[in-house]
Image (tube, rainbow, N blue to C red; front, side, top):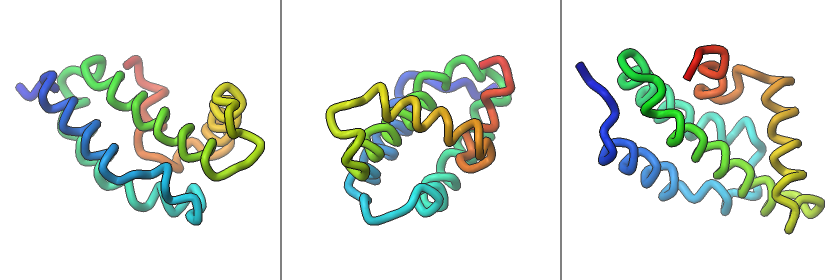
Length: 109
């Protein structure tokens, strides 16, 4: 049984962090999805099978990174984290299959 340990969660978050999504302000959101989706999909397929609750925080970290990217890319969000979070939630409603981890929101994580 493969349950996500504290170390594997940290390794995943570090991997997402090293991608430096927030510095890719020249990219559109679908380009960022292409870059990080294989990592997210593989990680969730491996760990979500046994204990989906154990990876919820790490998947939330991906959303926080996306909010940080939006704050760097769009002037109207600079210094306004809440506005960027609202915008990201609207994108999530409009395109629920854009990022691999958004599909797991329908599951009880």
